[in-house]
Image 1 (cartoon, rainbow, N blue to C red):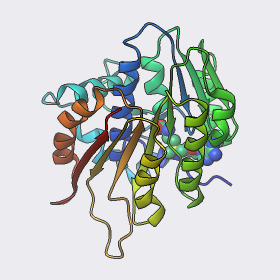
Image 2: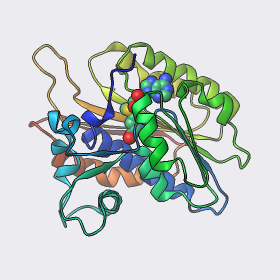
Image 3: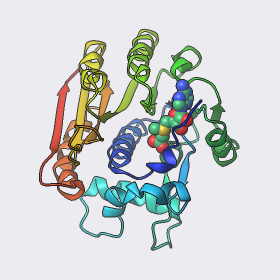
Length: 282
Ligand code: SAM
């Protein structure tokens, strides 16, 4: 039974960090002509209305994309990311109504020689995704377990791939499955670029995840985290989120160093938190 729906969270601060990082990685991949495969192991619905009852319930985008929308003082990479969101809304729309999920961000950046491979288990989100992107050349959409996707997707024939691993972490087991999946993925294809998003919550498995991912990175890795919210009195709640990238583009550290301090300043919901950027170069 899948209870999680990303529509409740679309455009929040976690999406901002994740989708900005995804954009920077995919743009770097597109600097070379040779095609690559993008695998989204937990794709969601592809895009979200911010006026749906789901999105309105918590309006998490108010502390994410909505703080960046409509501004003309954004740092370049943030402006580029907001331009993708703007294009998804239709260029002439002054009001933010829709938010692109990772499949839509990828679709906007992939070229005809690239491949889109999307895994989504929720029947409703899978149906929406299928009707939105199923007809696109180079796209294949699966309603199967994304944690098993390395078996069918890696290595790609072009030997170039980016894999986004973005589970809901509703169940504790997801943390161990991320590690298990990546262990298999780097054995199959050690040159791939792997992006893991994780929530900054008070669970031991979440705290330990980056260290575990470092240990199985064959070459270089990068870890970025943005802390914007105060956990509640019992220590619960999502204080922020992180992205861990195995085999990051060599340009990613400098690009994130440029935007993370600014993003923290703009997205923080209390007088505290911060950001972290760490890497082991290949
Ligand atoms: N990557 C999306 C984005 O950035 O727009 C958001 C994905 S959301 C955090 C996680 C999604 O994974 C949910 O839509 C959920 O239904 C789906 N899901 C949960 N378990 C899965 C599994 N084992 N394989 C594939 N999808 C799964």
